[in-house]
Image (cartoon, rainbow, N blue to C red; front, side):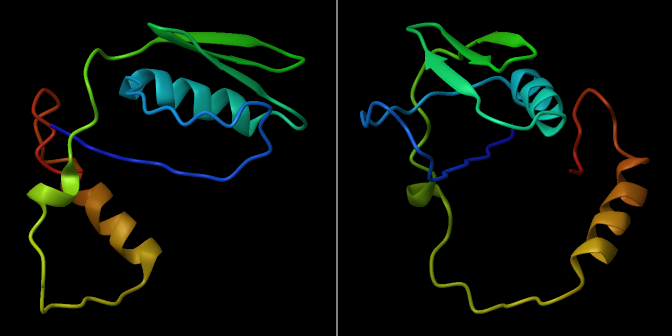
Length: 109
């Protein structure tokens, strides 16, 4: 299983706080579409979907049922190891290692 979280500040019309789980494919496609756009994006959260609209496109994705796990309870606290390194070199190493992983299980990511 994978778990990723993103928080960001933005100018929004409604200040209600929402937590949703968007499928990985939906995030990848939305990110691809939004990197090609300039200007304003409107994001609407429905009960079972998320919709992003710009002047060029409208993208809709289903949401995953359930609540985001309390990851802070699961992750170990008080680690005593710190690793510093070059980000690009680490990405390249993971890319080379990912060649050996099974696509179904994606053990390396």
